[in-house]
Amino acid sequence: MGQKVRPTGFRVGVMEDWRSRWYASKREFGELLVEDFKIRKFIKTKYQFSGIPKIEIERTRDQVVVHLFTARPGIIIGRKGQEVDRLKGELEELTGRRMELKIVEVNNPQQSAVLVAEDVAQQLVKRGSFRRTIKRTLDQVIDSGALGIKIELSGRLGGAEMSRQEKASRGSIPLSTLRKHIDYGFACAQTAQGSIGVKVWIDLGEYSDEEKTDGAHAKTGEAPQKSKRTHKR
Image 1: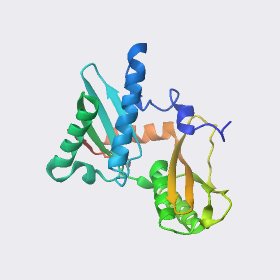
Image 2: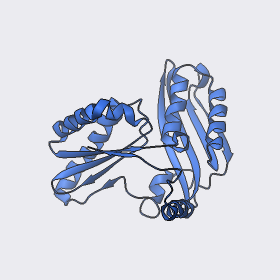
Image 3: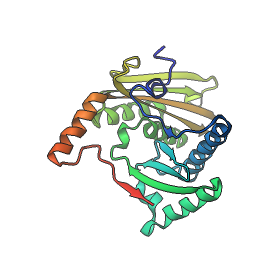
Image 4: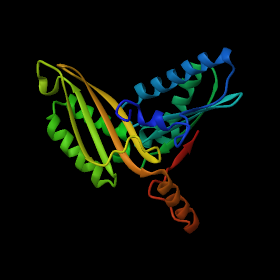
């Protein structure tokens, strides 16, 4: 089971929070669900090189709050906040609702599975050797402080005629242990020979350890290592 189930979805409602937080009647639910999908697709397409691992959406009766996590907040905020104002206007035009954007900085991109998968995909598109790419990525993620990482590639690797799968892992990946924070990411590399799928699992330790670390920093008044800088608009 641990090999088939998406780790984040497996933990939602138990240890992980929902990516969309709102309540709607049966009549409105489908429309709002499609609207969430459109918002995420629009932002990811427009800022595909901004390092966006996830987008969280909250709704109240009269407005939509979008929490945009990014490794490069300067690209989205722009000079004097002009770019984020433009994005806010485009989202309001897309949805017809009042929007509020909160930009959250991701300080350690090497511990975000989505960003690691997208980085591997970009290197494959640039015709990099997949074995060298995998080995370098494993080293970088372990050096960043992660407890374990697993990478799986699937497709016409190295331009071969027949598609195949290649797996590589380092450290621990306890997929069925719910108290373990396993981050999962997927990306697709559109190469000249065809599409190559990239899956990444990263073990970030236990959720309780993260809470203790954040609580200790709150008591001492120090900023935690994974501190996030937010920009409201």
